[in-house]
Structure formats: structure tokens, C-alpha cells
Length: 408
Image (cartoon, rainbow, N blue to C red; front, side, top):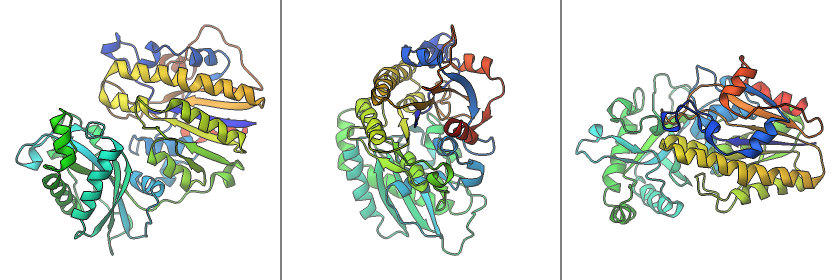
């Protein structure tokens, strides 16, 4: 038996005025998901406890079988692990986004425009981060380069307590279009963090990459934004929990970091961007190759629906779901059939990213659980939030779903 979890990050949603009161899952042309829905269990699960941040970190820990209430130490350390960053017990790690904010003279008066610096390219981001690292050489921090706009900053907190009470930072994708003043770091270390952010903005204003982007009418990477702080993580190995060997196929460092902490192999696919334009076919081929070469389990993650949710562009999110259906699920099912071995497939988002809010929420998410050795028979239903809610009024606990998926 092979086991595959296919995640459309942020794929579920709420009724959207731009879609005549429907959700992207209701509008999207997704014949493969809807056909699978007739042969699979459909239900709902709650991946994120109410007391924790609604994010891909907490949600995907749940999907891999780890209770985020017990194991979550912050988002950024998980990403740092994927970048090979060494962390000591005194280190506090932050996500270091390259962002685009407005350019009022006072930093505090500016507005968050883009959490991704206008979807800056990897090459541009690497050039900027290299120069930023040199510019920050006199500061008590280390930086590491990640994917596109996603990087990390590591600070030695010395003799401060392991759990730093009162420090509050805000994800930039939660405040798009808002003034940043109310969302700047607060509490212990906040003055240092704000100093770093202001220092980056002054340096980046006339950076060659930004001048070139500005000349093309593109949003610039005119500041760093620090958030998602946390300490070095520790997870029980996935193999020890479930006796299965596996891999994580994703374009997102966070997912690779969770996988590495769990003892799963990170798989990097050339041309996989984490955006709408990505190497869908390459990711499917990588997942199938892992299974053919001996893996029992593959966690296949697609970021595009989430990015489209953050953009607030309904047509793009609908298209992202369509592409996941046709360019990922369809060839994945064909490849699994060709292998000639029974398999279980779990299709679901990790969390909802409503177009109307442009950020993550704690809503229950719909899932499809298919067992090729015991296909079910259902009539006249589709894979949507509303139909899953009608079938499953009480959602299951997110981190418990994988045990039922893997163990039956």
C-alpha cells in the first residue's frame, strides 16, 4: 500500500461576491476531484486549534500528524531547518520577508502593499539578500537566504528566557492595504526588530535591483518585515510514529522544514515556484518517482491557491484549483494506476484563505479520502465546502486524521 497526501494550500474559502456568492471550489472546473468524490469518503477536519495562529505552519504540522498545541515552537525555525541553518538553544529565529510598503518619510506611516515584494524572483531576491547580509555584518544577527521573498533572520537572545513573554509580531500577508504602525513589533526585543526593519528600508531604497524593478513599473523590495518568531523545533520521527518511509515534495521551505524535522526527505523540483506559474508536471513526476523508488508515503504540496487567496484575485484562485485538478491530480491518478499497487490518497487544503479577507482563518477544511482497494459509491455530489459540511457537521481533530488515513 502506498500513501499520498495532496495539499492545495489555502484552497478552501468562503462565499465570495466576485463569484456570485460561491466559493472557488464551487466555481472551478475540477472534474477529477468531483469524480473522486463519488468514490471517496468526504468529510471535514479542523487543522488549527483556536489558540494558535492560523497558518501553514500549524496546519501542516496537523496534517503530518503532529498536534500543533504540543509541538509548535514558531514558524521560522521550521523554515530555517530547510535552509540548513544551525540553531542553538539561545537563538530566536524570525521569518524575514522582502516586502513592498509605501514610501512616506516616516516608516511608521507607511502601508503594507505586498507581502512578497511583488512576487520578486529568486535571482533578484538572492542579490538583495547578499547585499543586506553584508550591510548587517555589524549587527548581532545572522540571515539565511530562502525562496523568493521568504528568508530568515537569527538572533542570539543571550540569557533571556526560552519563552519570551509579550513579544508580538504580525504576518505581512495579514495586513495588506493597512497602515503598518499598529502592526510593528511589540514587547521584548521590539526596538531592535524595528531598528533592523528601518535600517533595511534605508539601504534598499536605491538598491540596483529595486531601481531596475521600478523602471519596469514593478513593486520593489523596499523593506524587510520580521515575524513568525520561534525556537529550535523537535518532532518525533514520522517513521517511529507510523513505520513508513516518506518524502515531502514542495516549493516552500516551511514544508521542507517540517518534513526534515519529522525525518522525511525534502524533494526539490526545478521550476517549482510556489506560485500559479509553476512546474506542476515536475512535482507529480517527483512524487511518483519517490514511490517507485521505495517510499511508502509522499506529502505533495501545492502553494498556488494560497498565494491567489492572498492576492484577492478570484479568477486566479479558481484557475489555481483547475490546474491542480488537471495538471496534478489527473496525472497523479494515472501514474498510481500504472504502478499497479493499492494506494490511499488524501486530497485537501491545509487551511482556508478567503478571497474576501486575503489571509488565513481557522475554518474547518473539506477533505477526500480515497482507498483504491475499497472504493466507495456515492451519487450526485461534488467536492465543496458546503457539501462536506452537510455530510460532516462536526469536523474531526486535524492531527488525528492522518492516523485513520494511514492505519485505516
